[in-house]
Structures are given as C-alpha cells and as structure tokens.
Amino acid sequence: MSKQETITRERFNYLKKYYDNSWDEKKHTLHVGLFKNNNDSLEKSYSQATQYLIKNMSSIKPIDQDSNILDIGCGTGRTLISICVKFDCQGIGVDLSDEQIKDAEIYLNKSNIQRAKEGKTNIRVKFIRSSGSSLNKAFGEDSQFTHIISQDALLFIENKQSLFQNIYRLLTPGGVFAAADFLSESEAKNRTTKEEDLIYKLVNWNKGLSFEQYNQILKTVGLTISHSERRDPDMILTYQKLAQKMNQHQKSKEKTYLELKERYENIAQSTKDGKMGWAFFFAQKLPRKTALIAGTKEKSIGRFLAEHLHKNGWEIWLYSRKAKKIDKSLWHERKCDISDEKSLAKLLTEIKNINLVMMLADGGESHLVLEELSEESIKTFINAKLIGSLLLTKALALKFPKPQEPIQLAWCGGKISQKPKDLILYGIINSSLVSFMNELRDHYSEIFEAYYLPTPIVSPSTIGDAYIQKMGTEFQKISQKPKIISDAVDKIINRKLNPGIVEIKASIL
Image 1 (cartoon, rainbow, N blue to C red):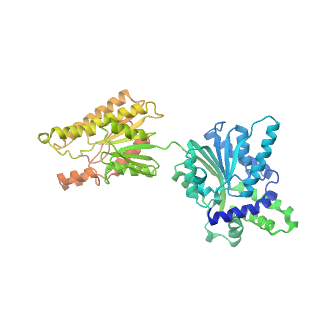
Image 2: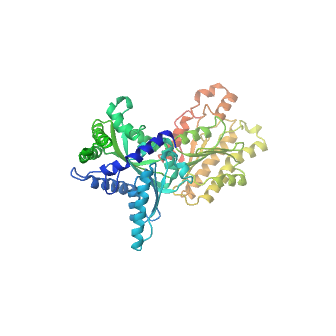
Image 3: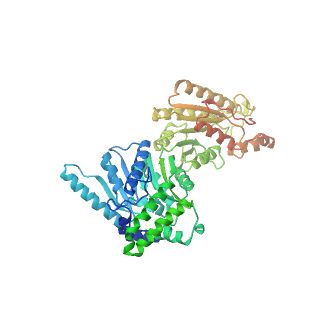
C-alpha cells in the first residue's frame, strides 16, 4: 500500500463514526442521493440512487442467481448485500478502510444469523480490505465478475489507470461496470484555500477526473459506454441537506463536526460554481475483437494494419513463415506456413476467437515474365497465396462453424486483369482469389464475409518499395500511402461495404 493510500485509510478509519452520525445513522450509507423532488429525505434519496444504479446496470446485463458482483469501495456493504439477497447471487466487497469492512462484516453476520432462524441459506457475500490500485493482487484470475459496481469511492483510488485496466480484466465478456462518482472539474490552482482544505485534503482526495476524462479512460481500457450522465443538482441538494443536518451537532463543538459542516457547504457551493460534480457511468465489456493478419516484416502492410487495429483495442495475431514468437499486451506474432496444415493447426489452437482475417496476396519476389517462370517459383507462389488461402479458410470453417457474426476475410491484391507482364503469376493468383471469394459468398455466407481489395502500389511498404526499386522510380509517382488500405479495412469492419470487390479510389498499377 502506498503512502497516499495509507493516509486515506487512516482518514476514513477516523471519520467513520462522524460519518455514521451525520449521513445515515441507521444504514451507515456514504454516497450521494438521487432526488425525485426536493422534499425527499436523505435516506430516501440514498435508496433511490442505489436503485437507479441497479436498474440501469441490469438493463444492460440482467442480474440473476449466476451473477457475481464486485463492489469497489463497498463501505459498509449494504448495497452489495441487498443485491445478493434480492437476486440470490454472490459478491465480493473491497474497501480500503478497516472500520468500514468491520461494519460490513458485523452486518452480514447479523443478517445470516437472522436468516438461519428463518430457515434461509447464508448470503453469498464476503468482504476484503484491499486497495483499488492493486486489484490484480486481490484477484489474479481474469473474467471473474459479471457486474462491477461502485458508489462514490473510485475518486479516492490513487492509480486510476491500474484500477480501470483491472475492471476491464475482471469483467466477463458482456459484463457491466456501473458507478456513481465525484467529478473534479478544476485544477488545484483554481481552488480557494477552503475548497482545497475541506473538499480535497480532509479526505485525501487529490486525483479527480472530469466528466470527459472519465468517459475517455473507460473507452481507452476497452469498455463500451452504454450511458453516462451528470447529476450535479442531486449533489448540491444532498450536501445542502447534510449541512443543515449538522446543526444538531453544533453544541458538541467538536472540531471534526465543524469541519464536516463546512465541507458539506463548500461542496454544494463548488458544485454550483462548476468546479466539481457528480455523475453515473454505465459501460460494458464487449467481446474483444481479434484479427489474424499475414505479414511480420517491419514495413509490411500486415504490420501496418495490425498496428492500426491494435490502437483501436483489437487483439492481434500476426503470422509469417519466418516470424519470431512474440507475446505482448493484445499482440502476438507466430511462425506459420498456412500451406502446411500442421503448421496452421498449431497456430489456430491458440486463437479462441476471430473476427477478421487479412491475407496479403502481394507479389512477393515473383517479378517474372512467363518465359522466366520456373516450376519452383510457380509452386512456391501458388502454395503461399492460393493453397494457403484455401487451407486457412477450411480450418476456420471447421473451428468456427457457427460464429455469432460472419468472420470477415479480406485479400489485398492487385486490380484484376490489369497487371504488367512481369507480374503474370500475380495476376493469375488474384483472379483465382476473386473466384474463391465468389464461391464463399455463394456457399458459405453464414460463416464468412469475403472481400477483395484491389490495392495500389503502397509505399512505404516491404513489397511496394522492392517493386519500385526493381522497376524504376517512375512507379513511385503512382504509389499510395498505407492509409488507403486501413481506411478501406475500417469500412469493412464497420460493415459499411458489401462483401465482394472493394473499389479503392487510387492510381492502381
């Protein structure tokens, strides 16, 4: 635990009894309320905020008896326990404060004793004191939770990048993240001394996120935002009512109560001034999209496309006959000869899901006219491009016979019947691939969507530059940047193009 987190833990351990006496004496709630009208009590508003969180979360992915809930910053555990009782599911609550976890466990034990008297089973909940900055230490296994929730707690977590990366990692595919949290819309230099002391330093809150930053970090880690909304008026009303409630403690003249009253007043005013706020965020972990792409050379089109998709959250598998094994975050490189079924089977054993396959039908080193073709060059090129495509597609059809949506296959090659004499073999292969694409469209449309990209000379690229060097620099004038292909691929993966030959508007050799 870092020094920063140790301070936060000690602050909340100390403030526990004061919060219990000023927020919610009965349930020890510690989060902002949601008001249907200004006359709602604080207790009613707290319940309405929780119900709103649960309702929106379960509308994305319903909670049932098989659900597993993680509550980060669970406090006294009342929300998690109520969810698990209502839906007969299980959950784990984590919090940095010893006193909050102690309270949660006491309440859970009392609830289970009462349930035992009524002949009911124990509530399937446990509580752990842990830091949100290091959830990887508390939970090593991926994809454990169907739902992850938090109510006004994530603001205190120091390493937010680690927090949100672990939230993504721990969610099952299709799982939902639902949170209410404070927003910090101003930098420290724009705050008054009172705001800094009472809003931030009193509870050791120093790394806030704005509404836009919150949305962005959720997207960056790979979550898809279903809904996010600011509810600043509810924040203002909650803290105004809390400040009024504190009048009953004024006779005690305890410094902490006086500070808390000032804190609540300052939060209400700062929210009115637009310096802070309160919002709900609902996001889902959709299944990670995966691409299998040919080409591992430094300037290959395959690597360029892989890097482009990787930046957009895709898991990448790059292959070639001479590749070295590499495994990084969502990035894998493997040695594979797709014209060899054993080599192909070994590669596909590792890949659990696939959405896009890119096969680069480039000319390789076959810059030859008919008279120069050899038996070896013909066999090598046909094996690599045509037989390899057939065997890879066959293997995909056997491994993924009923995909949720058709696997997208895309070949990058030259424009049909418009190749120069020295690329006659390349032209024959391109025509064969288009015929194969048509066969897939006619007979395997439930498994595959097949596309053919008649790509131009691309520079910089491994093959494009080699061809320009061999044929003369005049070919440089009609070459295109790699972006022309990535733009076409974006349209394919977003299903803005119909399967078939994709027209790329460019100077095509």
